[in-house]
Length: 178
Image (cartoon, rainbow, N blue to C red; front, side, top):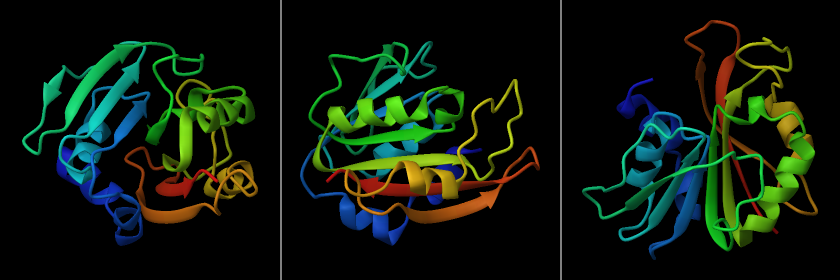
């Protein structure tokens, strides 16, 4: 997916209403090459910070043209990370399908976020595993059950698009921590 496609896929009016006009602190967990990290950076308020976390982040430390500071960090996203606390938001794009214990992972994310913080999920809309590439899939329906009240606001679906691999559509969904 290109940078422009990722930005368009992530950007929705409902999600924009959750982004405040003041600087915020976010994390992109499983950032990979940084495609969605840079897309998210375009939506954040100037002077926000964005931790780009992956076992081997493929993005360099930088400050974007709208003054978002991106700091890559090499770490296992499934393990507690003391630098992730009081976050205003977390993005997980095409990464939660590698997490075996998704309920425990979601609880860990919940503790890293402050009340009212946003969690954005981008995933394949299927529950059928593809062992090497999508070992633990999380369809929108399954994500809605996992990310539900009383800990979260109801999950809202944003944009969808066909997967380049033809197996299932990609969806973008978001919720806020209660």
